[in-house]
Length: 268
Image 1: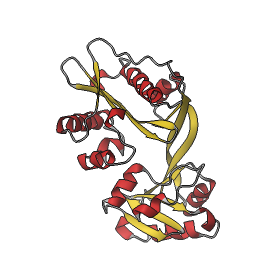
Image 2: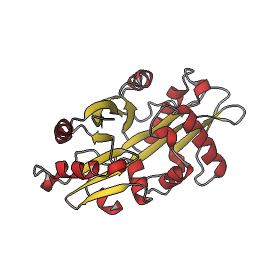
Image 3: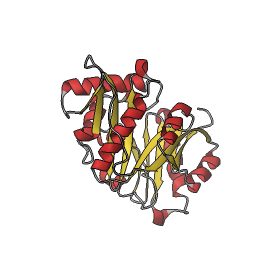
Image 4: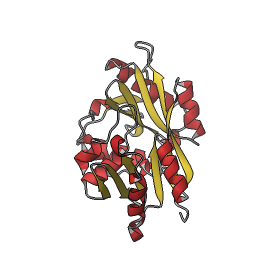
């Protein structure tokens, strides 16, 4: 079903499945239900679902949720609605699911030549070397510490990282590494470029260095990289209740573009 999942992408709508879901489906770590009309994916107790445009309005979404809930011990306790689609809200009400988390997609224009990518004294900026054990282990350790309380990002494994390295959109030049004077990884800015919008895929700062403005340094360096690739717009995702990050991104000119909502089952 991996190829079929991509076939459900609808112009003007967000992707129905996260990158991690696509990785887990390809690795056989997810349960896939449905057919060419609509698909539900369950992994780690979470549900993501999409119904093709021509099949909407005929109860298929309800049927897919019912099939997912019938999985017994593997039934989902949480569900994502990417884009907060009205149909998803209706399904949630029908099954008594309640919203428990929001993920905001922010967009901002980037003016060519207006970005200063300089880094503070004592730090240096380099690019990621795909397949290099040192860069991979350094980045995974940074990511785990910076996102220790994040339910998805902080759990990324070496297999997850290498799966993304194999994606057609991945470039080591788009994963910027900020190192301190000792050569230790202090932060990173990972960019994902598909189409004419560049996404700040993950921006991380080592916990002991947070609050020193390095997040802004990485954002500016990432923006400079995007303008160097000829892009004029950037996007990113942030937790709806992460006020420090939201403040940083708003200062950088980002405004809300879309919203993802996570729902919890009545017994979750």
